[in-house]
Structure formats: C-alpha cells, structure tokens
Image 1 (cartoon, rainbow, N blue to C red):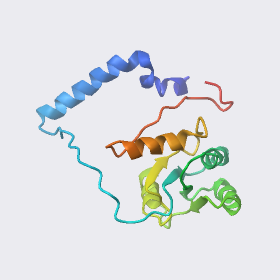
Image 2 (image 1 turned 180 degrees about the horizontal axis):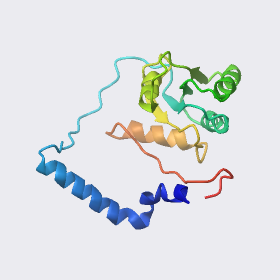
Image 3 (image 1 turned 135 degrees about the horizontal axis):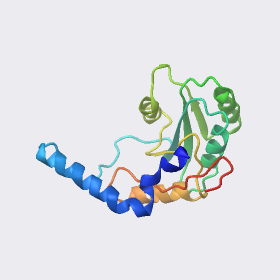
Image 4 (image 1 turned 180 degrees about the vertical axis):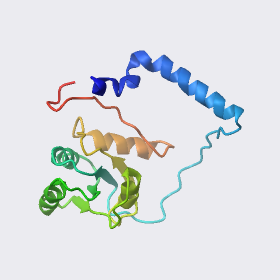
Length: 182
C-alpha cells in the first residue's frame, strides 16, 4: 500500500539515486550562489545549568492509541545520567491528555506540558520543550507513535553527542505495522 512506499527512499537500493538527487540540489544552490558551505567550530561550554543531562521530547496531538507505549519506551531507557521525558500535548481532544495526566502522576520523570497557544505545529511544540525549565542539556526526539528499539538507545545517542563536534544525531529505525511486524 501507500504506507509501504512512504519511506521507500530510505532503502539501501535507492541510495545511489538519493545521492544523485542531493548532488543536483547542491549544484543548483551553487549556481544560484545560495549554497552555504558548512563551517565548523568548537561547541561552546554551556553557560547555564540544566535540570537533567537529556530530555526525550515527544510532541503529540490526538495519539491516544500510541502515546502510552511511546512514553513507556522513553521512560524504560537505562542511562548513566539523569533524564526526563517532556511530552508537549498540542491540545489533544481524543483522550490523549487524560492518559498523559494519569501517567505523569505515576512517573516523576514525565513532564506533561500543554502549551498556552493553540496554533502551534510540531516545530512550535518543540520550542515549548526546548525553552521549558525542564529541558536537559541534550534534547532527543521521539515521535508519539514510535518506540525505542532497546533500553540503551538514549545512552548511545547522548554518548555520540558528547563525543562529536555536531549538533544533531539521527538514529535509524524500522518501519512496522500495528502488530510491530516489519
């Protein structure tokens, strides 16, 4: 079906085509004099202190059937550092809010945040998390319908962020159906 083709560009057999398209786009930006060559510098030491080392950020709207599993997956992470889970609930109307309120009462690491504004998209919800007093030094996204593949995933991502001279790490994932079948 269409859902099978949605992520087809990620398949290894399409890698050469993807690289060709990236080259075309980069060349076009160069001809327009719009290509910005990457510049790297040392990552500065943070000037502020953080409540935790990392926050798993889960933006959500109307995902009552998947949010509990996503949050539980995040909370089950085993790390050598303190972390929390920030769920930015974008005014859900399907029972998601009540489910998150219930979970937050039982889980001290879980912060259920509902923005004042009602017109935010996923980026606005991300900003709500990042500017929250609860946000850690590192922010790691987990979609509201996704699960971590192992309890070590957050540790691995933060280890990479600590070592590297980069601001973002992207993990791989496996696309599955509702029965968690590939």
